Image (cartoon, rainbow, N blue to C red; front, side, top):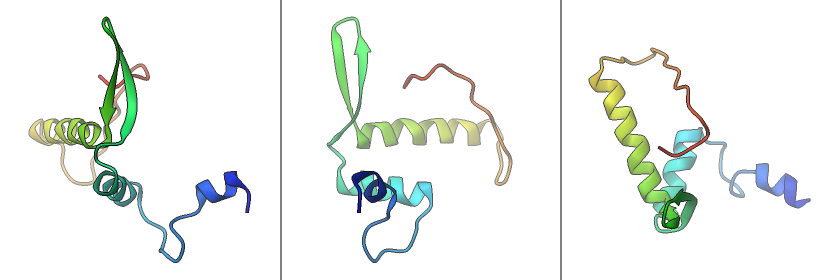
Length: 83
């Protein structure tokens, strides 16, 4: 199997998972691993999977607080950046 093909395959023997299930698994397995680096005035700051997950959950909580309900859709328009 090629490296590209291996990247698309779920864990051996595991059923396919949703994006959220896979993200939860990655965060549980590698909470302190670097998810991305964020450029700041002082240089690059490393952001762990656990911190990125906390940020995403905070956005989700904010949307719920604004009244977004199950099954409703929202579009977030932004540059490709973590803020």
